[in-house]
Amino acid sequence: MDIRDLLITPVLIIVVYAIAFIIRPRVTDATTRVYFLPAITVKIIGALAVGIIYQFYYGGGDTFNYHTWGSRFVWEALMKSPLTGVELLFSEGEYTPRIFKYASRIAFFGDDSSYFIVRLAAIFDVFTFSTYSATAILFALTSFVGMWMLFIMFYEKYPHLHRWLAISCLFIPSVFFWGSGLLKDTVIMGCLGIATYEFNRLLLQRRFSVMHLLLLLISLYFIFAVKKFILQAFLPGVLLWVYMNYTMRLKSVVVKLMLFPLIMLFAAGSAYFSVVKIGEGDARYSVDKIAQTARMTAMDIRYWTGKDAGSGYTLGEMDGTFGGMVKLAPQAINVALFRPYLWEVKNPLMLLSAVESLMLLIFTIIIIFKSRLGIFAAITEPDVMFCLTFSIIYAFAVGASTFNFGTLARYKIPLLPFFAIALVLLYFSKSDKNVEVLEETEY
Image (cartoon, rainbow, N blue to C red; front, side, top):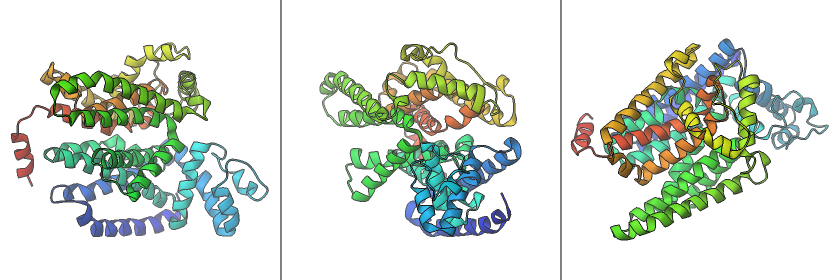
């Protein structure tokens, strides 16, 4: 951070709030209006806090490699020689005489997924004069758009649960902290929200438009470019969501029961096909190599790249086979959802994650005891099944491939809004109409 942060960033914040006040009437109603500006505010705070933490606590890290040692060189090239800058912006990781002066200094040059973030930051740099904190705020706003769309989508279905849904989508502390900085996770959060909204609009509501189709395709492409394994967890949930929604629309209970096994089989087959297709072209994410990739990633984070990010953990022996990985699934899901435990906390940032994990664990236990056998019927609701399918598959993937609590706190944030939404829907699945009355009369 430098003097530009003190000059450019305050101006950008004023502009952001001015635009927010103008568009708020168009994207909110009397109920959701109260969440709009606070949600933007926590995103801005999160973006600035991540920079401060990385600079003064970690002394460096990914966010500065994306910007100070990444996009700033692209921005400098664009300012001095637009042709050089454009070539650098669209480079596929190959050094050429024209761009070598800049590319040789970029930390993530040649790393496709990381360089994608460098490119995006460089585009924002054009508008912020390569001001780190201002560019980080633009990243945060990208995430906010997606999370707001996710909130609105579920709010339209369950308006009486607006407060709980707002907390789940917009105000989980680790999500608006790690999901607001100049990081991959921020882009992923925004794109997941947009993709979920657009899948609902295009496939479930059947409200087609070219613009919304383009938004869906762009969001999916961004996820694929940054962290394609997230699509391998997300698309199976989406496919099951769509199939279950159309099944639930059938009037005959007998037909529903007859079709349910076929639907589940078809959904499983489609999900497997989507996982295979996503892994094509990258051996690390092919079905027969994904377990080995998880093992290598876990060892790298545990003992090398993430060794200073927080306390490590282990799930037991990983032999690099898919069967061996599946055996660790219960432990992996547990560590992603409910750990670190309070007694495992080693630093202040881990305490935030530990408190959140404890709250999720308590809420989950309450729901299980409250619902008893009724929970099985509630889980078959399409929205609940979608959120749980994605969050549990993703929890398995990230829990089995991280082995470091500090890194896990950041990597697991895509699952938290969806898991929280599932818990909310399960908790209120048998509530009487008084809940709706109580929620609405407070505003």
